[in-house]
Image (cartoon, rainbow, N blue to C red; front, side, top):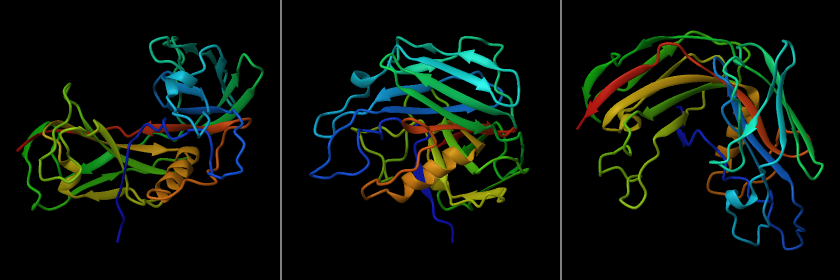
Length: 278
């Protein structure tokens, strides 16, 4: 039987300063990098912050690094892109060059140098392109929500150079997604997220999944996609999910000289969009 884990696709607030609580722990400030590059897109978001003292309240904005030199270079192709800090989102660096497109099957290196002399680097290889070949939901159809109906099935062609696949459900409406009130996760004070990745324990070579109606619980325009994700992001997710409900210890990062991860993903062609009504 497959186990189903619900996991927000963007991870940022996890890193709060230490990997293990200990009364004898001495706080040492470190640099944290989190970022994904995606095939067919420019580099959209690399976030860089300092860790915070675990004994104090942590707000990422207060620890954001805004004056670093951040460069993405191609390892096996000619590619150099110096990222620009986004003043509207402290700690976020992104590309402004629309010609610097990330390519599938290619390898890239991230280099970070901070004003206080810290140097970090990380490498990733972008998974190959692939395509969704079957969905039990018809694209652009109107669907009435029915939790008693059969599960929804999806199949896709194999990717390459990937760690695993990450099926993702997204609400495409501009307002907050609305989930039926009977769902335990739905509360008035905490609206549900607009994008959720479903970790279903997929083996690397599995190219099909079955999603019960509970994971299509949004009303309105809802989209199903599959991403092939690299080993860096896959390894990080597996460690994070395994720590749910307990203390997060001994996370293995792929960033040299700091904490965090630098990964890659490729979106499958043929995503499915449906309009779900109550």
